[in-house]
Length: 182
Image (cartoon, rainbow, N blue to C red; front, top):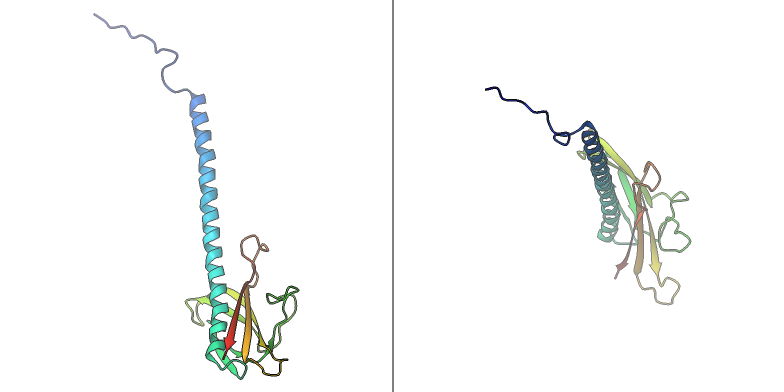
């Protein structure tokens, strides 16, 4: 006896329209995931450069604190082999209008400014990662009073040079303010 094959029911299986619809939903979701991954990579890179900016500002603070503040110079060498003289005497880069951070709008006086080159690895043969503009100001507090306090206010600001698309990917300069002295 021969078996008869019946035709498939019209609602069985997956139609081409359903496959296209599922593929479209998958593609849209994939684009969202790719966007999140791209954003995460950009944020990670920004955090790396911003951490380096903070580290450089902290290095200047430590160099000045290690030297008799107000009475000499210290030295700092970058990854390109450039040695910078760090002036610890009162004076330095001009402050912004509010007087709370260094102004990057004008040039900084010699001895109160450096362009620090970061390479990976930190050798002269390493691959250059970024260059940072670091500026500082040393102010003697109470200088106009009959008995000077020998206390200094140190303001250090640093920012990465050539930040690309303005401030879209990189933050504003880092500013540290520290009181030093005896």
